[in-house]
Amino acid sequence: MKFLILLTALCTASTTFAAFDIKPGLWEVKMQMTLDGKAFDPMAEMNKALEQLPPEQRKKMEAMLAGSDKIPVTKNGYRICYTADMLKNPNKVMEGTKACTTKITTQTAKKLAGTFDCPKDDAKGDFEWNAKSSNEYEGLMNGKTSKGGNTQVRYQGKFISADCGKVKPVL
Image 1 (cartoon, rainbow, N blue to C red):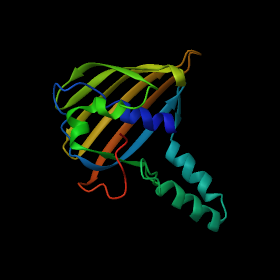
Image 2: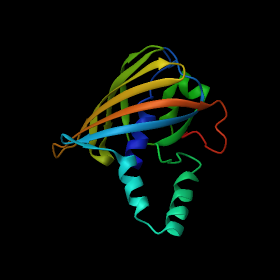
Image 3: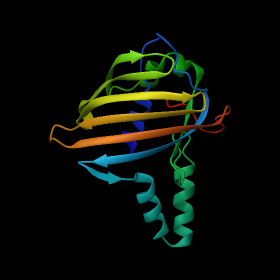
């Protein structure tokens, strides 16, 4: 899950040709995955596991997931804070991490596309993000491992608030 969230941030990595045209602030992101042709919903699986816990333990686990100051997890997805600077120059998202490299092939205010290579996590592939409006974006990432595994992740981001509150940018 941590790797997928890193890829979410990574997929906005680019140069300064055009700022990706979404609002800075707090976003909730949902994702649907396909692993080797089989659909997998990480949030549904997490919710299913939480439901099986005793109420007191479930409450503690939900508080821990929601309490992260970087990428808190909710029942619907996860939350991420995008700053105006990140949207102007998304390469800043990847400053400080050597886990993945990206190459941008298309960058406009409405579309961001490229390739990624994450040797440490044994994954590489391509991605495309589209701003449907300043309050909504969608993305698709296709990945492959050296063992031949295929992964496809679809993202849907919805703007929550200009104030990120306690959620810190992933920089």
